[in-house]
Image 1: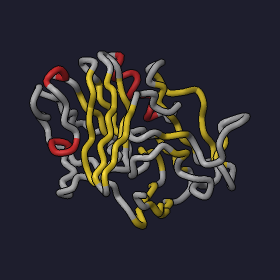
Image 2: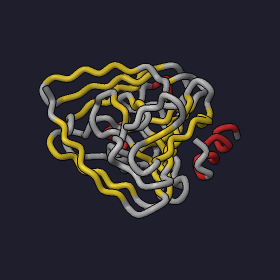
Image 3: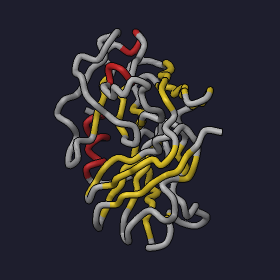
Image 4: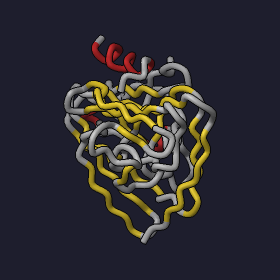
Length: 218
């Protein structure tokens, strides 16, 4: 019941970046991102790397360990939460679902464990598209940065972040003022700080936004 109540807030656009512990390792263009999951808690996550084989099905990209049997995954389907709710059997998801990197999802964890994302680090000109209304948004590359940048946004657009410690949407709301993002005194004009695997809810009050991120592994 608590899970449903917390997820329901997203539909109302009531929305701190995810405070899960993460470590990133990279070699050439292959990336590894560790995300800590905590028993009985919701984690608002994203795929910080792309599967090398191009298969974005969660059976290939989000692999939990046996301790997470009965963990659930919640995916935003554009205007509401997807009615298909995959459950982890201990070895696999019982419902296949495609989730690309650059979008967010919740995992309701059943144990303390580590989720490791493995895949290719996107490089070059990386394309993003933000539709009108509510959608999830995340960095497609495994770096810690303020996102999506001061040049990305429309007047009165908002972003809502998940407080993993408080298990609620943060009362701090990011708003776009026409030239930069603002969440109050001392806020970064480029938006909230997202660590690899973090996501935000984005409320687009205007027209669809398409932007490009240029990234190269050093």
